[in-house]
Length: 112
Length: 117
Image (cartoon, rainbow over all chains, first blue to last red; front, side, top):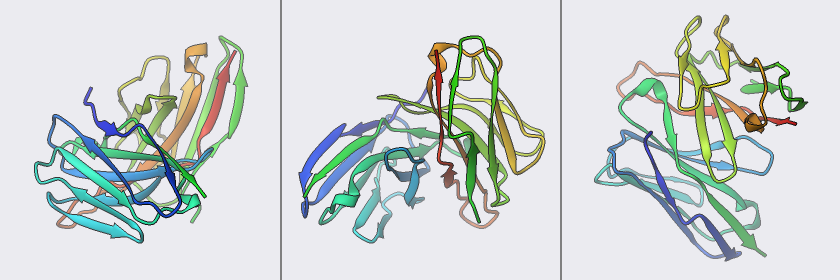
């Protein structure tokens, strides 16, 4: 199946630092979504991107839909302890009945 | 709105036993999905449904069956559980807008942790 390469796999940062992660694919996606998963919970949608070049913010989070439509980036500014969790990117090829392809996830640890 | 709910939250099965996982959504979403999540594998699609009475195979359908008799419910069945089916199972739903920009945002339930011994 389709593959999304998400990096880094894990990050250990100090509170207050900025965080960047990205997803790349060999295929062109029409939609990029970013999710966060807390331990023992289901993924929660953070940001949805629908147009190439689109830059969208949600509080301290900013995500961009790459111009080539083959990548997306998520930035977290001034990290806080509650940012801890697993962050997933997900892409949609065409319509595909809404079927998403997920990255492997980035595990974020924030040290106070 | 409760969003997407899943029952049960935890279950332990012996090899060969059967069980059904229930997913319910109160958002009037057309599409529903079942995923499994394993360490280092991300989320993999098992089966999905694009409407009441319809189902289709996803990426890893073997060993599972599904039914969507009502729009708000999506059932995942394991007829003969195997240790390889030990995983966390997530249900999700999404709604296709008819406006200019179709939207496929999926909303997830809290998950069911299944262990097969």
